[in-house]
Amino acid sequence: MSPKKPVQTTGPKAEAAGSKAETSYTLLRSRILDGTYGPGYRLVMDQLARETGVSTIPLREAVRRLQSDGLVEVVRNIGARVAVFDSEQVEHTLNVLARLEGYATAISAPRMAAAQIQESREINERMKEALQEFDPASFTALNREFHFSMYRHCPDEHLNALLESEWARLDHMRRSSFTYVPGRARRSVEEHDRLLELIESRADAGAIEEAARAHKVATADALRQANVSGPR
Image (tube, rainbow, N blue to C red; front, side):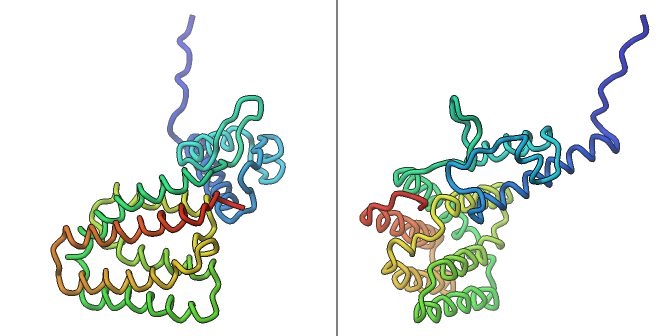
């Protein structure tokens, strides 16, 4: 009996399958984060295949990755669906992000030159301008831009990946915390100013880490006091 041919794990076919899985992951993730597939939306493979024109195999791989990201959950007798969150999970994610953000900001600070600090300051000034005709979604986008303007100086790629993952999870949980606690927006930009002052003055890393962590924890506290229950 002739030996069986080994399964091909490299080459054009394998690369094509990997490419389709990556494309499916990017597409489904985008639709979850922009609200096209809202919390509780069932991810039925045959339906997704018809919608996207992609076969079910790469779609299943994409859904497994999204489950690992915390954006999809598998429920007994229901199957895969877009994750549903409650206020406790929102608060938990904010507190995890506070610790990651504190450390990332502290180790990024010494790598930020004057021009880079000014860039972050200008984003925060745009946030102040946005307070006048307040649009929570736009303000939140600027808030993300502000923080990532500092993260990109972080030398730890693994930490950057964790931050991106937690921000994506948070974006899915609630489109904007400022919708529920609008008073938090003004305090947030004031805390940004304080954080930039610490970075510019080359303050102790511990002080910078504590300020960045306290900034995010304050948002978690505001949401808890407002009894926010996640996405609506």
